[in-house]
Picture (tube, rainbow, N blue to C red):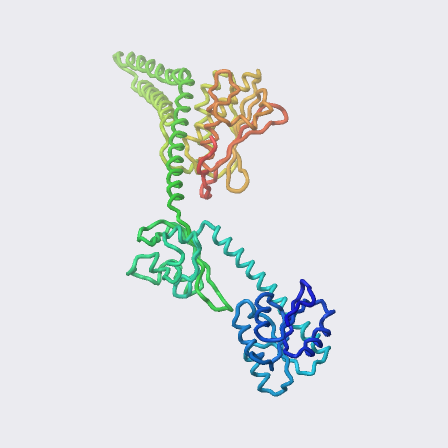
Amino acid sequence: MTEVVSESPEVTVLLVDDNPQNLEVLYETLKDKGYRLLIANEGEKALDLAHRHQPEVILLDIMMPEMDGYEVCRRLKADPETADCAIVFLSALDDLQAKVKGFDLGGADYIAKPFQSQEVIARVRTHARVIRLERELQARNRELQGDQTRILNSISEGIYGLDEQGVIEFANPAAAMIVGAPVEELVGRNFFELHFATGAENPDSLPVQATCRQGIPENQRNIRLLRADGQGFPAEYRSTPKQEDGELRGAVVLFRDITAELAKEQALQEAQALVQEQRDQLAHTSRLTTMGEMAAGFAHEVNQPLTAITNYARVAKRMMARDEPDLDLLRQTLDKMEAQSHRASEIIRRIRRFMKKPAAGKEILAVPVLLEDTRQFAEVDMRNNDGGIEVVIEDGLPDVLADPIQVQQVALNLIRNALEATRSAGSSVPVRVSAGRAGEGFVKIEVRDHGVGLPEDAEEKLFHPFYTTKDEGMGIGLATCRSLIQAQGGEIGFERPEDGGACFYFTLPVAGREVESPASPEA
């Protein structure tokens, strides 16, 4: 007799007894309790129903013909489909040995005949709840394991699980792809023997050893690992200790092949070096252009001491032609000739220093000296624009660390622009060049003009290459200035004074302060 007498999606209970009266009592006891009840009157049928329906609880009679309850229990526990069922033995036997044997075979509980309804209901309810929770937990665990497997399989980095000796207990598909061997061949192999040359001079110093044996996390880049075929490749790895119940059980290693990444980094470095070379060339070209624009004025400056030297030489010749030359006067005349020659030499030296390409490296610079040299350079533009230059230096201003040629180029460019802007506005107020501290570790240099001011969209365009507000400008001056100042580790910008005109500024790091220059400043 096999019968499904009630259906419920919640819990299934299998009743097994060769006595129909016992089955009827169990059925009447449980029929209104919301269970799905299955009935079997002999062992084989019980095994078949249990295999097909996986009941949570099985009430199993021990004393049955052909196959007793012990054998049914043994076979149920041997079947993975039914091994987790809660088996509650039913028997009139009340001796200790019978109970112990049932528990040894995997039984969960024992109910003595004749049945007590409340006892049956309570025990079925308890075991049903336990088995349902266990099954839900197992299902959740399987789901989590599936999620974990999918996640590990989707990760592009290789992942190993190692024991304390470095034996690979787990490897994901990415590890197999990187190493060039199936996962089955990786599991069981020693990580250190697989990925490092045998006979290493100091095997205890190999990567990941400290994690496996001492629980010390590691993170290294650009180490050389071996593939399964013995070919080496550069890699980055992170290893973390694997612990269970507070005991070190090895390490989890995440690694990746960085061959392509290193090639890209090398290409990027070469590109940056080329950009920097082109930027330096552009700055040098800008200086040559500036000198071309100022050539007439410098020719006039050099011509003045040369003319003076010629005149003093004529005077000296006339004095020497006398019968009794005045030696003191002659000495004074020659001293004046020497002074004028030094003046001409200094002008030429200043021009040559400004025009040459700067040597690599930065120098410690005194800001007052730097700005005074720049002011002397700008004297030509000052005369051409009928303007003036006022230099104001804060007391006790610290020295800065920068390239003197490049900083002087920026300062001269801003001063020349300021002189032109002031003249175009018809103003006679001198251009003001000031220097002072700016926050922690920087000096700020400002150039203030009294021109017509800056356009509304200046923020977006002013420092971009080839943008200019001049009719004949090329638009590389301020773009080059930004590049040069960023290379010093400073910043450049502008402000709009309330009383008109414009104020351009740039900052330089104080000597002794560590500043990183941008890898590729916007030019």
